[in-house]
Image (tube, rainbow, N blue to C red; front, side, top):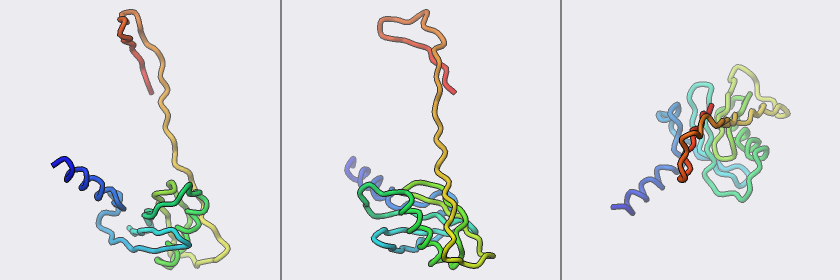
Length: 134
């Protein structure tokens, strides 16, 4: 039973769309050795890289993803967000495709916790410590 559960979890992680793209059908495309699944919902396109690449560079992946989206939709990509595994692109079908234009990439926002020690007056030898994080 445990092995079956592990197999199902492993298979469900392969190219699973985000909540906004569950209803969208995937289109598989390969660009210069990178394989992508594309799903479109209005002016947003989710692109998931589905192959292994040793030490992928985000600039190269984004350029390949942009080409895949523009080839599939016929619309220029205006902006990207994401990382080397999953990108979400915004397209503008009211604009004409221009080969020299490149979409603006916005890196994902990183959220860090900042913690301060609140109290250690009742700390035991086991190391109880009260922290407040925001």
